[in-house]
Image (cartoon, one colour):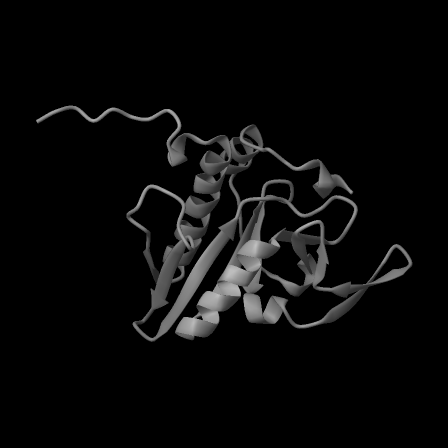
Length: 174
């Protein structure tokens, strides 16, 4: 047998993927503690969603993990509109709900909700202004954190590891 050479440009070696793996592990652990069985993709490359989870062989969900903190100047968090459209299409085609988990190293929490719940319109008063969610701007769709449920706390080790791998986009500071 020959030896397998590891490609330094592989998916797993990417800086942001390492942070994502920390978030995915935290979510997987939370789900398993709550009785969910988690199915991970075997492929070590980009994939359509992070994993499937089932509970009591009756409930099935697609789990998508976003390892990123909420915005600093707004009470929200979000992700790429292109991915949002992909998740909506998958949910509709296969009639499986998509749960978006946000792993937030600044708050030290995991929170989120089903995409169809996040999608419903909501108005929030923030700094004297009314914000109508979801908000789409600069290729990102944002949802209010107050609409999400807190699912668990991150350990100090998880927070530190995530902050070490942060590549926070400057737009998140606005």
